[in-house]
Each structure stands twice: as structure tokens, then as C-alpha cells.
Length: 191
Ligand SMILES: [Fe+2]
Image (cartoon, rainbow, N blue to C red):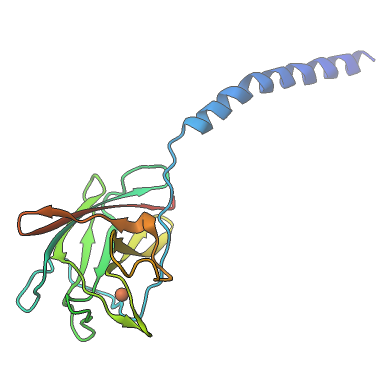
């Protein structure tokens, strides 16, 4: 009987300790920052690996409306993803991909604060079946849990509405700047 009483007291003491801890643990979990992971999108048929490392896609033969894409990559704990490899590819202003070379393709690494910027042009649109796909830039972000393949869209594109892959949360707004536009893209990869 005595042993039973001791065991019961020990059990109750442990239960009390757990009860006291539980709210603090719940609070800590609730307060931990959480960033919503960016949705994936199709790779499409035009990806090529090993694009050159560069921060500008403006070169002879590339013409169109200049676009400065400024991006920040974080993980799902909202921590900036430093030195992450990002591959970007897009079509030209007339909707054509360079499938033989590396025009309008780049590999970029984020800086210590998870940022990168890319000088490019506003992509054109191309026919997909009977209708045009809205303007978009493809990207692959190499994160701690693998590669996130997605696409960046543009607010106000008339072809967004009927595109099966378009998502509003991945549409950036084009802001006039000097001779072209600037746009901000913030992505979150799983941690
Ligand atoms: Fe595409």
C-alpha cells in the first residue's frame, strides 16, 4: 500500500509539472515565426540545366522593356536563405525561348540576407494550345529540402484569368522606374 501511495504521489507530481509546462510550450510554438511556403508550378518544356552564373540577362540580341527583378528567399521559419542557388529562365519579348543557347537563362546565388536581383526584360507571351499563356518567369530554388520549381506571374496580365497554372500569390506588380519596371518577388521554401 505504501508503495502504491508513493507511486501515486510521484505520478501526480509529474502530471502537475507537465500541466505547468504545457501552456509555456504551446505559447512558444504559437510565437515561432512561420512563413507560408511558395506554391510549386510546372517546369514546362523549356528548362535547361547549367545556365551561366550572372545577374543580368541584357546582352546583344535581347530587346524589350527592362525589368529589374528583386527577390528575397526565406525558409518556412522565415529565416533568409543565404547562398541558395536559383535558376531562372524565360522567353523573350516575342514569346520565344532559346532552346539552343543560354539567352534569357541565369543561375544566381542569394546573398547573406537571402536576396538576389536580376536585370532582364518583361517576358512576352506564347501560345499554349489555342490560347496564350500569361507573361511569366520560371525559377528553380535549391533549398534545404530540395528544389522548389515555380513560376512568377505579373499582376494585370489579361491572360492570367484563364491560365490553369496562374496563382495570384505568385503575381508581382510592375512598378515604373526610369526606362522600365521593377518588381519584387518573395519566395519561401520548405525547411
Ligand atoms: Fe514558360
